[in-house]
Length: 383
Image 1 (tube, rainbow, N blue to C red):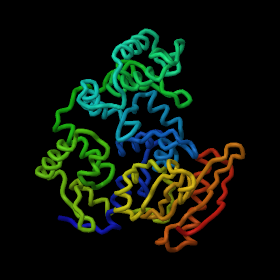
Image 2: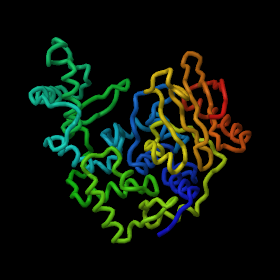
Image 3: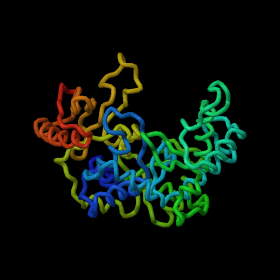
Image 4: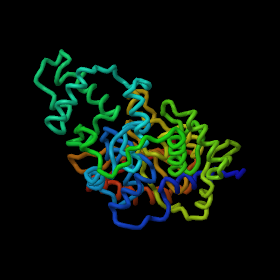
């Protein structure tokens, strides 16, 4: 069994994620699509203190990314919205692997957030079938305290129909979801065959290892329902076939694809600073980030102000092969300025002057990505 140092593990994780490695070839748009297909999903989030998470995560891996790329991917039906561990954009090539969850929700085997109002769901579906794509706000005209159009129950009906596969999100308008019948959103050539349990389990394993380099059963099962046994069987089968193998990091056992260690022969840009989204795929599992990068991170926008340690929306800062700082950032649209309210450097950070020089250089680029003409660092300290 191969034993990896923490430094080697971090390098595998970063290169598998498409961070700090050799830039991929092709046009800017194709590189953006390649990012989603490599990662398997990009999480959607509503917080807009800086550029939203789905755009930020793509830009972190493709500096030539712009918002039009994602809009084009949706319009060309290369990606679609559904649920990963959270709301996300997923590659259309993986559509069939969302069917098990949809069928489980539709049949009642898996609970969703809302109790189903079947009559209201039928009414909503019929109206979209007749009128075409609609937003939740289009269902107006009846008493809001009733179970009719415009009430919260209607929004719940839309979301339930979406989660169980009857509806899809055809686009977003000013970030509002536009719902349409699934058959009108899907491309004609999409694979609609239901995967077997074996196929589904192996897909989940392969997707995780492609995106992360190595992982444990617990990590692969993160916020998923009803798939732990499928994952166990898949891991055993893929180990038996030789497609994956076991490795250790600090005496902890993980699984990895049998060819992933060749990534260690590739270079890593250790001079590059990266501003990461709090919802970035690299560190969305905080325990893994703590174990591999020794970086304890909490997004404090959900923490009451007086109890915050670092700030409302601190971005993890990657430099070389480690997470070395966090920056509480905010865009001021009125002055077109990206403010770093407070930059906190980790106690383990050395070569501080070199880091600050690289940070300032990347901050200028990050400001441009956030459509700001100016940037300002207001305070710098050690954690």
